[in-house]
Figure 1 (cartoon, rainbow, N blue to C red):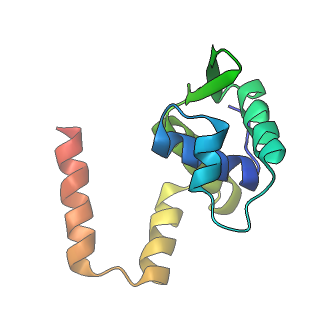
Figure 2 (tube, rainbow, N blue to C red):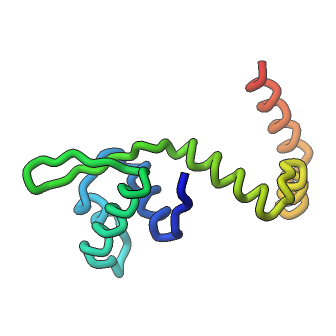
Figure 3 (cartoon, rainbow, N blue to C red):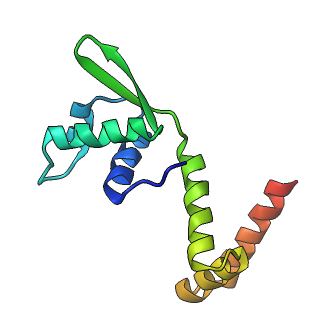
Amino acid sequence: MEKLTKAEEEIMIMIWNRGACTISDLMSDMKDPKPAQTTVSSFVRILEKKGYVNHKAYGRTYEYFPIIEKKDYSKGRLGSLVSDYFEGSMNELVSFIVKENKMSLKEMQSLIDKIKADKE
């Protein structure tokens, strides 16, 4: 799965949140100052070339939809984060999160319980 730029990722998140949508739909979701419609269209075409979205044509209107699930993308990004910043160790990542965010014992126990339940 090819890595996305920050701008591509922002648009992809909008597509995941919306589901099937047009460029106009994406434009309506954006805050001011909005980029040009041609810019958004270019980014969506790049996402299509990278294999993240596909489209259906309705006359001159294209409706874009995700073909990679957000969950799958998240897994890949997390894997990259762990390998790039935490020497490939999930233990190092969790330790960092606990230390930096001052995760409480109650929150940690809740997370452990959830992991145990998911494995059963």
